[in-house]
Image (cartoon, rainbow, N blue to C red; front, side, top):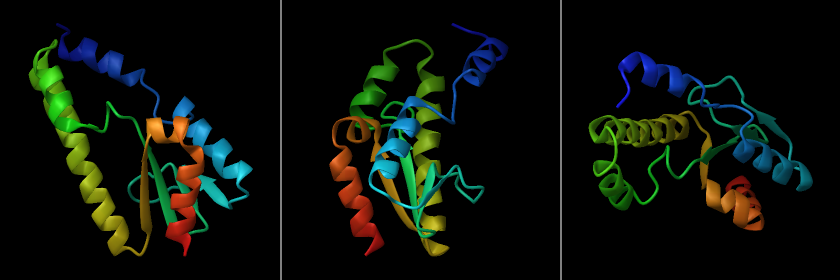
Length: 133
């Protein structure tokens, strides 16, 4: 088990920009000839804004709690379960709050799981096209 200081040191090394996931989505958007901005400085810190109205988040299955029941059980059996369950639960709660606020501000929010970006890029593009209509 790590001390708070050591855990903070480890967590600070985790990238939040220019990740493999974000770079993959940028290539998909570029290839599809979308007008987009990466890492716009707006509330919620979306990964992309497409045509000024669709915000796109590329979410890691682990950090954003995909299949939460199953992941929560797994985390509960691992190292430092209280920390990890709480951390991911806070991320999930923040994601919901960000979605709500951004929709209230007039944006269309689209979230993709990492596996969708990597394995189903055409589907991701179709979802963005639907959101733009």
